[in-house]
Every structure is written in structure tokens, then in C-alpha cells.
Length: 116
Image (cartoon, rainbow, N blue to C red; front, top):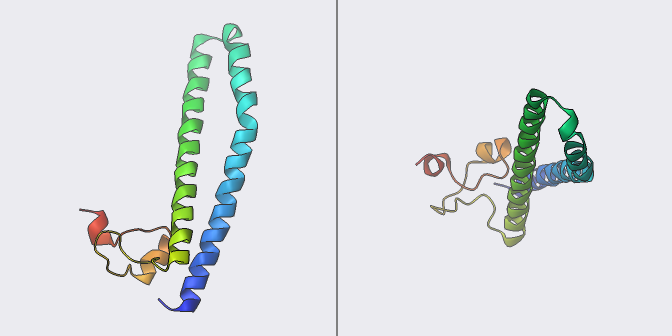
């Protein structure tokens, strides 16, 4: 991978980090309101409605956890760029193909290693 490709990937990672951070901040700003609404309306709801809202809340939590993981992976990739180890498979030490990194800038393994 040449310097231009590395810089493009770094810019993509920085943009992704900003996007995910905004989503996390938005979710965390709404979280106290959502929790208080659930507590305040429990007695007033039909059990089926409460079950639907609980299911929606569980999906929100799962999405939030996924965003947190994505944020950590982006930070890991940016650290690897700074350390000079970005684009190297963590299992084999072989270079990760540039096409894979363009498709998934946080890739840590070559495809053969990830699927085994």
C-alpha cells in the first residue's frame, strides 16, 4: 500500500469515527429520557404494548453496543496507522489486500484467516 492509499484510508477512518461518535452521543443524550418514559408509563400500558416497547429497547441497546464496538475497531485501526502496523494481518503477519481495506478499513485479518 502506498502513502496516498494509506492517507485515503485514514481519512475514511476519521470520517467514520466522527459519524459513529455523533450517533453514540445522540443515543446517550436520549437514554435518560427513554428510561424515564419506560418507568413512568409501565402501569398505564397494555401488556402487549409494553412487550413491543421492551423489544424496541433491546434492539436499541444492541445497536448501541454495536456502535461502541465499531468505534473501538476504528480507534484500533487508527492506532495501528500511527504505529506503522496497519494493513498487516494480526494472525499471519501478511499484508491485507488493499481492496479488502478499502471495503473494510478496520479489517484485522486476511480473509483466509478470518473464516477459519
